[in-house]
Amino acid sequence: MDMKKRIHLELRNRTPSDVRELVLDNCRSNEGKIEGLTAEFVNLEFLSLINVGLLSVSNLPKLGKLKKLELSDNRISGNLDVLVEKLPSLTHLNLSGNKLKDISTLEPLKKLDHLKSLDLFNCEVTNLNDYRESVFRLLPQLTYLDGYDTDDREASDSDGDADGVEDDEDEDGEEDGEEEEEDDDEDEVECEDDVEDSAEDEDEDDDDDDDDDDDDEEEEQGEKSEKRKREPDDEDDDEDD
Image 1 (cartoon, rainbow, N blue to C red):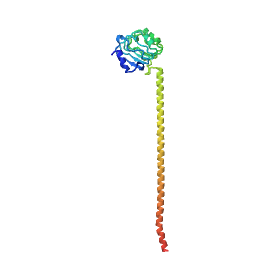
Image 2: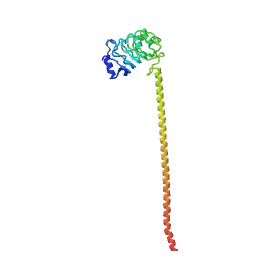
Image 3: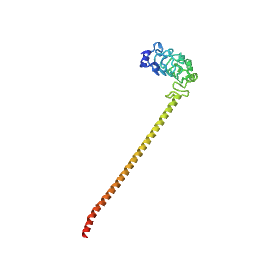
Image 4: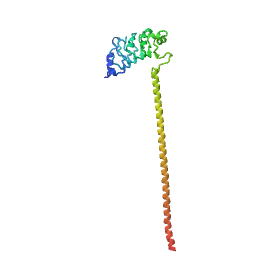
């Protein structure tokens, strides 16, 4: 499927301005150029063009909000200054598996002030002596090269210091919220237990009152019975007199 048709399918009755992510992996690019992608995708933040046969990014439109660009497994060998001109907000760039041979080819990327992650796996440039030191020296704004920082620490899933802090804060917030909910649940359970205990005490008190009433009734009945027994005896004594 060619790139134009793939873009049409990816839109799914949306307008280009509604699209934030666009994945065009493995489609066909005519003459090794980007086709069908226009500056109308003004809100695009993620673009993936993996293995589409690109020779150049010269036809890339102006995408002011694009942050992540996947260009791995193509045949790009240079002309990276286009990325600087068209993608001023770029933070993540993957050029793995392309035809990049020299460190100097990467020099235009110095002007991408926000670029913090660059991947060059399986490019010939990675075979050069002092490759990592040279790239970090050329691009001081970089945090990660091929997934590792200058101290060989692996990039986190969030791929960024600020993102990582935000994620930690969110997790802490969620944990605090869960603890509060648990405390509330415990309080509710204790309240329910107190209510149940109070109800049981009231039932016991009612039972005691009922028992007392029963005892009183029995005493009254006993007194009446005694009176009945006494009355005939008293009558007999009167007759004898």
